[in-house]
Length: 232
Image 1 (spheres, rainbow, N blue to C red):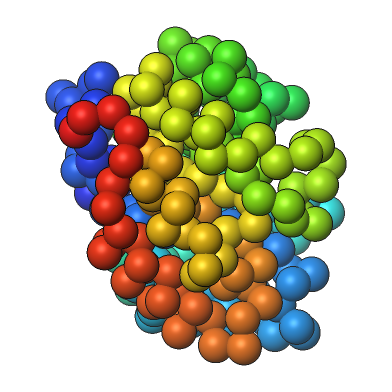
Image 2: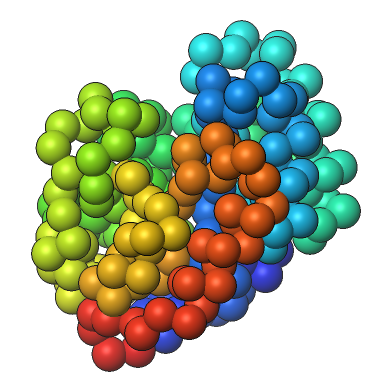
């Protein structure tokens, strides 16, 4: 189910991973949508060009999350976009989603892979070089690294790691890297210049008055920004 998702000359498993087209990875948060249904905001982000969404709604019950995925999947399929569920390998087994996104408190990537098989995507959140290297060794398809800038949504993870640390990760990890944490249209170019392949955005899209315009603006900057880091 790796639906045209992963690209990089750094790809350590080119025989099992498809070209990457996720310049923008939208991470959901219902508390930031200004009262709008999550489905409406997600659909708008996809209309703006986003091709991947991580459903991250930790407060929902298993049943409510299951039903939300069922409502989102037709929207994702209509746009040719990919849906990953945060943490919930059990729901990824029960539903035709594209994969899971794991954290340091989740099931280890190798165990998730054993359950999900080779066709599902596994993303891992990393906050240090050591975690990024470990995620690569454990078979992750891509990592999300940060927080890069101050942001309330990532305050629990401590002070921002900064762009210099992102550059270190880029030099030592061949996996696809998406920067996260305080991503905005005013700083996303610096994230790409530091070596990220793309960016993960939460409030920049979820809270935008026009999520389609917000996603489109981020994508324009990402695609036009000089790429830094290791030689591609």
